[in-house]
Length: 406
Image 1 (tube, rainbow, N blue to C red):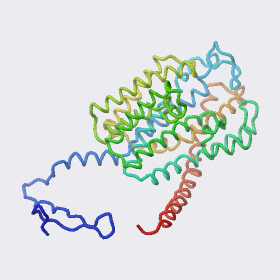
Image 2 (image 1 turned 180 degrees about the vertical axis):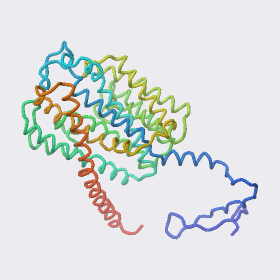
Image 3 (image 1 turned 30 degrees about the horizontal axis):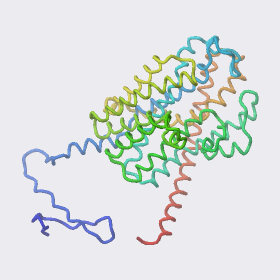
C-alpha cells in the first residue's frame, strides 16, 4: 500500500478499537558482511539495557544504611557530657568510646535512604500507570509495616519501662501509616521517615499520571526544589507540608541520579545534583544542631559526599559487574530491619545490658533482628503482598468494568 508520501506502508492495529496505523516498511537490507544498524538504534539499545538492569550494588548500600541507623540508635546517641539514658543507664560514649565515635554518624543512613528512594521509585515507575504505581507501593510498604506495628507494641507491653506505649486507638491509627498527618505519635520513633516518603509518593504520582519522560522529571525536580526553598519563609503551613523542605533535596538527588542512569549524564543533571548536595549539606547541619548533637558537620558532609559519589558510579555503570544473590537478600532485609530495630531493640538492650559486654550485646541484638527481618520478608511480606496484589487488581478491574465499554 502506498502512503501519501509515496512510501510503502503496512496496516497495523492501533491502540483504539478497530484503528490502524500506516507504518513504513523497513528498508531493504543491503548485504555488507555486517549486521545493519539503524540510525539511533545504539542509543536506544543502551537506554533499554540500562533501564532493565538490576542494580545489585544499591541493594547492598540499602542494607548498609539500615545497619548504620541501627548501630547509631544502639551505640551512638549519648556523649559523656550528656545525661544518662534509659537504654544503657549511662552515656554510651563512656561504655564503648570507639564504637560511639563511628556510631554517632549512623543517622546519615536516613538521608541515604531518601536518595535511594528517589532513584528506585523513578526506576520502578517508568512506563507504569498510576494504578500500577499505587498497587506497587501498597504491596511494598504495608505488609512489613503492619507486622512491625504489632510486634513493637507487643514488645513494649511485655517489657515496659523503657518506652511509653500508645493507647489502643492510637496504635490502630498507626496501621494506616497516616498518623503523622493526624497529630498522633508513632508506635516507633523511626516511622517519621515514612511520612516524608508518603508525601514524596503523592507528589510524584502527579508526574506518573502524565507519563514519565526525561523532561517531566527534570521539571518536577526544579519545581519541587523551588517550593522546598520557599516553603520555610512563606508562612504557609500547607506549602511546607507538601514541599517537605527537610527531605525534598535528597529525593531530588535520587531522581537526577536515575536520569543519569537511564539517559546518560549531562550538564543539567549535574547541576541538579550539585544543588541537591549544597542544600543537603545545609540540612545535615540543621539536623545536627537541632536533633542529633553527637556528630560533626564536616564528618557528616564527608560521608554524604562519598555516598553520592558511589551512587554516581552506580548510575553511570561502574558497578555493573557487582552481582550476587546475597545482595538481593540484603536489599530484602532492609525495610523490615529498619521498621523493627529501634524501640524493640533498645528495650531488649535495656533488659540484657548487664549480662554481657556492651559491644557483644549490640552485635547479638543486630544479628537477631536480621534473622527476624528475613522471617518477616519470607513469611509476611511475600505472601501478604501477593494477596494484596490480587485483591487490588480485582478491585481496579471491577472499577473499569463498572464504567462500561469505551
